Image 1 (cartoon, rainbow, N blue to C red):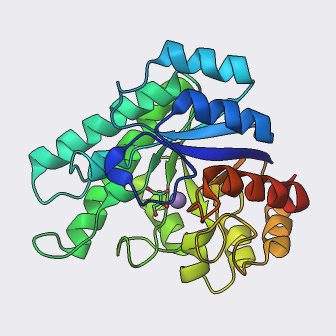
Image 2: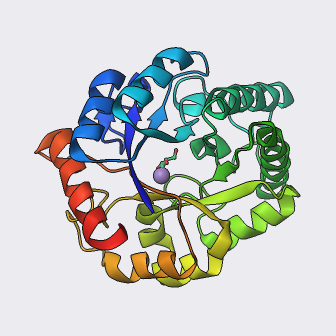
Length: 271
Ligand code: LER
Ligand code: MN
């Protein structure tokens, strides 16, 4: 397993669970200094980060690009893949395709998280799930041109009501019809929704494509009461070799402390 740390470049996501903020060169330098293998970035739009500049930073600090988040599609541009309005859904897919084009240059996967939206109002659960599965299927196939997968992230009940568990995620992936989508298993969401996190990871097996690492309270690993031993053991058992990426709230000690706590936990359990 490889370690990564999140960097948000989206002002509208302020208060969200990202370790580093705003300063991509600074975050890359710190990530390297602390010993991470990669960075996971949340750009505000597909063209917001210059790919040549990112390539230079990754090379300079010997980092991989773990994944690219599309959350700005919702948080900044108000785009949802389950919008009741067809034009809105179309623009949401275009946005994600743009993010796949960006991430694909680095062979990295894009993430569908908050762009899945919620059902309610003029979106029924059935219609919403149908639109979501269709979009995930199309976008998953689209990512193939880069030899990259697409990641779908089940979210806890307070953030979405479509897919909150591994079981629901596996159903959605099946419904999507694409064999190129994997689950992003976020240990914070799983701590709220799964009966047993390790068991759920075993159930997901080869469909685990990425892991978000946070403690029970969404602080950096070590800042809450999650028992990472059985979780890491389950990941080893399923042969998971991808990134374990810190997506957590910095505590009073700030981003650097959160990153260092994560690295300590990573070394102890996952390395
Ligand atoms: C949001 O809670 C989250 O976990 C992100 O990775 C998804 O956008
Ligand atoms: Mn997450």
